[in-house]
Image: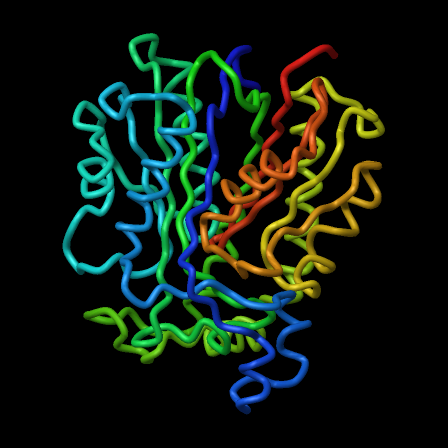
Length: 343
């Protein structure tokens, strides 16, 4: 979808706990294989011992609103996304986040789409702003805390380490900030069993395993021939969203104004399987990976990448960034943003 001119991300922030766990310390303690840090593409990950995921989202949301110069009372829509337990079993964390940031006039709701949920929340907010003239500001938050009581951040999955943290983005129709240009989405629901495996449907959380064992379901998916299909479907989906995003943004693949392509915060093997060959073939822009000190932030990777693009001042006026992401189910997307200025 190409968005109307003037739609902007007024602020994008990442909130991380100060405590970290070192990948190399995990190796030294015999808890992680020696190739674990390189396989996951991380040096360390942030770990929250005391702050819940929704509370991290509140802190990120307040920071984003402050940076954007937006009053919380002016937020008309709040979308909160997560992939793991938010602290209560039967509850709406989106409403908690809205109350915590002071967005008393906002309509809060949650977006759950595995690791693509943050991207889908951005997309939904942009569509709402485009369609509803009465809506002036939307706030998107993501947050997860992968506490060891139910999730092994280092060994629960292949080629990825999970970091705790939150992100937030303020979207509006005008003002300073990155311009939202286009966002394309591609789904392959026939791949959903990667995270289900051959497990039956359980009556309660953590029935199948404690902590959650993603490797088990992936092994079942592999044994059923799913990985061969995924190795074909994934790159095709990335190619589709990238080419359509360029077309909708009015950009040629070789356009020198495309400064960078931001990657999900996953391990090198996954990136080489699904993303990097397509990028190298189609565009001249440099792939960038920001995850060495955060690990995978679940559905927060896309907003964290936007925050780092701004923080590192990667875009000159008129330049573009492509932001790729994907998530179990499966869904992939490509977001096109531009630094305003002379073209």
